Length: 221
Image (tube, rainbow, N blue to C red):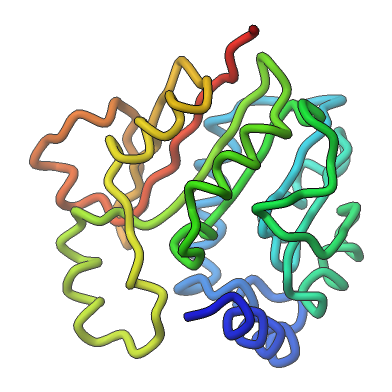
């Protein structure tokens, strides 16, 4: 699906669901909050940081970070951004392959459930790497290509959300190419309420991993 079609899709969801997490197309609210709590818990306590939520939707994922940090949100759905602004994010409509921010601005860059919707994902990661400061963290969360569940759902899901999925080692290589180290993974096993942490090395349990987050620290030059 082209970016314009996705914009129309998420504008419509924001129109129907308002500020609800359903506007961001999660399976259900329980799934969203479980994923958010595990991911933010994995990052640890954050204070006085400059944070970018790239593809922020209605801002629900990064909302808990607003009170103690400066959180920016960019998205192509302007209807969604209106709700993100109400949650305290500093919002702008932006192209994730050509952000208007200066190089090395952010201590933390989040990109949650976005790259599976974008064909030019390498250009997006390159741009997110550009705006991450040395020593800062880039965290991307996306669908797992090797998941048995995802492969099954792909047969029945009529939208294009399962057209593009990723292997963990695939994204690890891209992170390394853009100067990231100390790369770790958070593996999510929807609908089961637990996660695991580890490397990108394949094991049989990864067939049950439905989505994953990858994070790395940008090297100091």
